[in-house]
Amino acid sequence: MATFELPRLYAIVDAGCFAPDASVGTLTRFASELVAGGVTLLQYRNKQGSAREMLSHARELKRVLPREVTLFLNDRADLCVAAGFQGVHVGQDDLSPEGARLVVGEKRLVGVSTHNAEQLRLADKAPVDYIAIGPIFGTRSKANPDPVVGLDGLRAVRRLTTKPLVAIGGITRENCRSVIEAGADSVAVIADLLGDPRKRAEEFFKLLQ
Image (cartoon, rainbow, N blue to C red; front, side, top):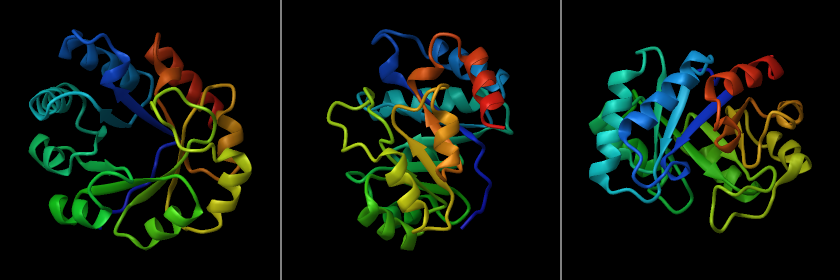
């Protein structure tokens, strides 16, 4: 497997946060502003779009963003390869980490979402490069979110793995530092990057130093 160091901020560009008729240019401008604010790793997430739309958006993000930016695709290992992204992130209801690894090969990155200690123990044994845990706090990015893990839960699961750990769910500039202090290597953020992505990314990095 490839090895890499997680940046403190794991930025997620969620197509669901934009108007249904938003152009791909809207997404790429938003992503470009994040990169201008210091983002070096970005996940493209699209829970409602067709495979054609996802691939079109992914390829445009790949074309527009600097080569140094590490790009992850949510859910779809096949489209990750087709778009030339460096990694895929799978959830508990998606293709298994083992299946994703078979599709993307050894040179690409694989991440997996977990929501409790049992899932994290299994992920620790899987062929993944990092493990996400959450929701740490209450979140509105999912229609049916899993139970809140909390900072105490994060501290507990930190002891179960030496793999890089990404905390996700309800993380903002106000609480991000406490998440790192509880053991996360990186914080994944969706909502609190909206509005002024460049400025907010810069603020996150200042807080996460």
